Image (cartoon, rainbow, N blue to C red; front, side, top):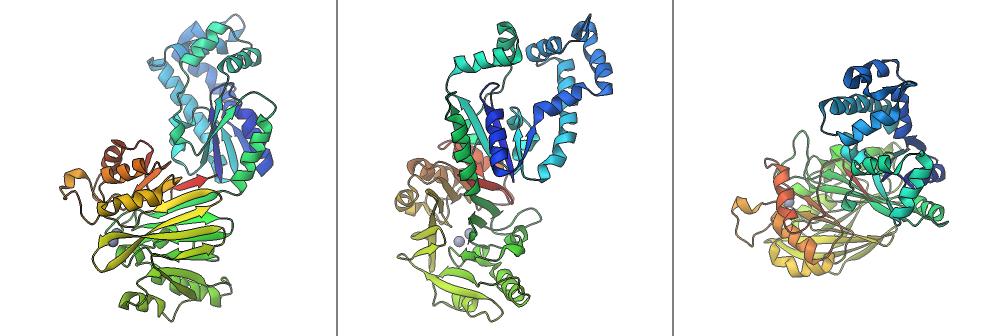
Length: 438
Ligand SMILES: [Zn+2]
Ligand SMILES: [Zn+2]
């Protein structure tokens, strides 16, 4: 697991990151230290004299502060851009091998780099006392106020919605205790892994809807659409429950993979407990076909409007929604560790009012957005547009909206743009992407 910790200089992010790494027994990676190694490279001096000439040297040789003055004040300068690219290449070569183990990465520039797309728990440290923050930097770095202000003017602006967790630093003795509490929450975290995001077909990069929610040793899989099993580690079948939202093939096609695999794994003594499969329309031919499968090591449970299930720590309930005639469809709500995750299944905007109530204040809403306004469907049909998904998220005051069930031939940025017209805290689902709830 990776944990990214960001924050302005002097915000306390390194203190926090070291404490978290220590508590969790993770490797602590300070990218500033890697950058300092860059200055010690034999090639470094010849590179910077080529880029900046004599301006970064004085009678004692290379002067880092002079380099800083140029880098922070002339961000658009060609030589500065080249210097930044060189130092980034160096950092990248050192950082990449460290990202394959449990690590806490402390780097204020992370959101500006390609590493930001990694699966990582992202924590922002926010100073609650700006005067104190600047004072701390002056003392620590022994620099002038002018130089500090120059450095500040070039510093990054963070967007809180890009982070899984925001921690305030009041610069009092509580800060380390807060770090310990966050470490404990990380240990008990809930992880949502996206296994499938598109419909009606899977292809090389994507699969039909499926989402894996893990907390403690229990796992709930919401739907198992075509091709989605490719993104699931079959060694993790123990303690798995699969909830099928409705009996459309793009939502249950991969069930036979899990069924047959469960039987083989059980015979190989690699699976002790049966997989629990929850499905609607228990007395229809399709559910009979699924629940009657002989080559499986599974239990089957019905879903209706009144169903409530306790699955380990998870408390699960359902809302019947309008989607397609003769295919009963259920949105799912999961409560775990004081957090709420809601999954829309496939849904018509006719169910908006009930679904807004069902999703009220959810921490994460995984919502279908099969359509865009431009696709020219009528206002009310069997699926939502991205704009309608955004409207539901807004009216339900959810904390984060994940758009899914996307048309594979459409540019995904168009879904994002349409949902963001109404709801800013929107993310597009992508196979293998993970989200964390603390
Ligand atoms: Zn459907
Ligand atoms: Zn569907």
